[in-house]
Image 1 (cartoon, rainbow, N blue to C red):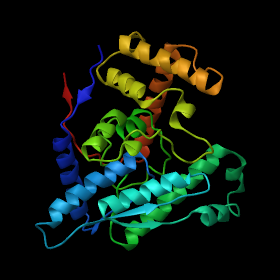
Image 2: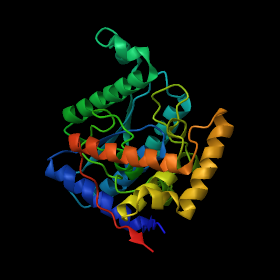
Image 3: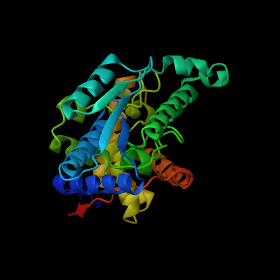
Length: 297
C-alpha cells in the first residue's frame, strides 16, 4: 500500500517561515516578492511568509517586507485578480497590479512564432512574468519566492523553465497540493481560494486537469509510490490508484466529450514519464526547497 504523509500545520508553517527568513537574511535582502494569482499555491505562500515576517519584525530592528505583484494578461479572469487583491488587503501587504498585455504584444516583433499556438504563447507569458518579478525583486533588494508545490514542480515538472520556475526559493515545494490545501485552511484562507481549480492562466479555458487528464491527488499517489520503491505496474494495481484513476477517466470523458486515457496503466505511465522529465528540468534550475516534517502512518 502506498503511504501518504501527514503534517502538523503549525510546525510546517514555522519551518517554512524560518527557512524563508534564513534565506532572505543570507542574501542580505529586505524581504520577498511573490506573484499573486488568486490561486491556493500563491495565496498560501504569501500567507505563510507574511506570518513569518510579522513574527520576525516584532522583535527585530531590521524589518522584512513581503510585496505582492499581480500580473494579469487578457487570458486571466477579472475574478482571479480581484481575489489576489483581496488577499493582499487581508494580509496587509503592499501590492501592485502590472498589466502585461502591452509587454506581451511587444514580443511579436522578436518572437512572432510564439503567437502561432497557445502552448508557446503561454510559456512566453510565463517568462515575461518571471522577468517582471525578478526585476522588481532586484530593484527592491528582495528575493523571489516561488509558488510551486511538490506535485507540480517536483512530481511532474509542470512549470515553465525560466518562467514560473525562475525563483530564488521554493517555500511550499515540500508539500503536495493536498497538503498545501490543508495549510491554506489552517492559515485561514477563504474556501474559494482553498478549493480553486488549478490553472496556469496561460491559455484560453486552460485547467491543469484538462491538460493532464488527471489531478494532483493522483500525481501524489504515483510519485509517493515511486519514492517508496514500487514499480509502475505495482502502483497501477494499488486500490486507491485504481479507484481514483478510473473516476478521473470517466469524469474527463463526461466533462470534455472524449477520453484522454484508455486505462489506469496509461495514466501511471504518463505520470512516471513526466516525473523523469521533472528530474531533468531540476538539473537545469533547482531552487532550494523548505524542509518540512512529513509523518507517514
